Length: 216
Image 1 (cartoon, rainbow, N blue to C red):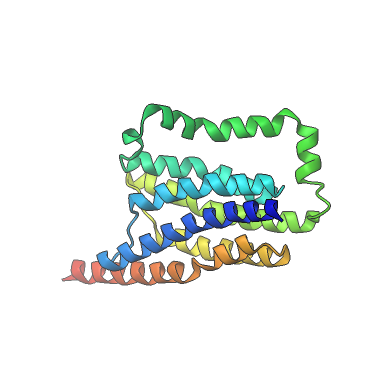
Image 2: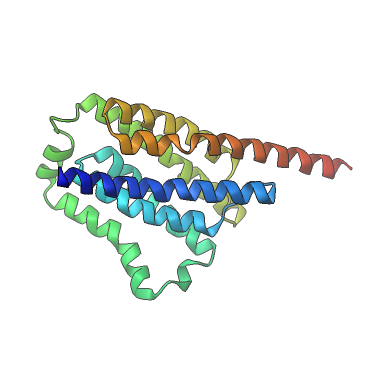
């Protein structure tokens, strides 16, 4: 019972960071009347990613871990673009940068045990693992898209495609969480739906205003 309390506390705290990043981004976008990519969004992303990766490891859930490893360095890249990373002490920078590599090393150190634990988990059918992993891949691709888009524009941005991919990936993860009876995933992913839709609306309105202003 105590172990479950600690486990879910870590998971819900991670989701709290992720939910907070969306809420802050949403509020700031409403104030600016355009979709913004604030530094606080990426700071909270790193914090949430750290904790959710620990949660996935303790829960023997490869789908969660895979999603966090893919997006982690994109969070760091955006912090670098925002000028935040260089303000962090070098020791902490090093810890942030090397942690996923070290964790991956531990996972691959005993490949047989890793496969047995994550892919042959009696509590998690393979089809459900594949379904959950698909949701995580799609959800994570939003950050790959965001990185590619921002890299081309030489600025940290959150384009419309980011929010569309978020809606698709998040929907799959919510279903996965419900099927696995995982309240952390089901509730945590549900929080962002309204913000995703609202960012699409704000972005559309801003684009129309820009076109109108250009035509004048």
